[in-house]
Image 1 (cartoon, rainbow, N blue to C red):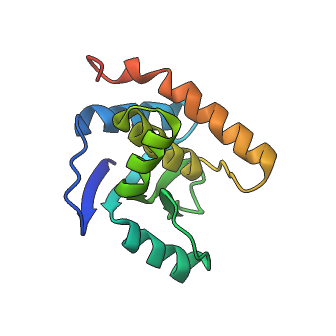
Image 2: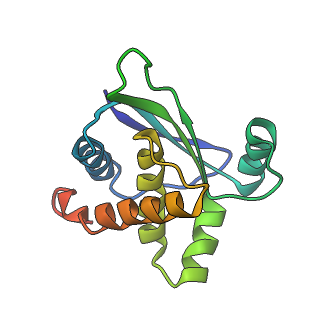
Length: 147
């Protein structure tokens, strides 16, 4: 299948979309899964806040929400929608002293790791998720030709 990118009420353009898709695919495969249909949807803070309230019952801003649509009959095929608040990602980049594209890559791989079964609610889960993010961020050379 494939990674696809969409915009919902914003005009964000991810540089190197095809290369990022290949990186996500390789990262998912490295976790022992196959890539199904994964949609990254870039949206505004307000849109993601509404989704956070509606679907998760949370009344706060977040940078990413992942909806896992993986087939229960084939537990090694990952599919889902990853909604990304581009404003919060930019704010987080500034807050943590990261380059905006580096922070976006972190969120892209974070969503993919959720589809691979990683959680981040408990402190130990959050540590493990950050380890996986850092592992794959360090392997962006998998993106053909670099970024």
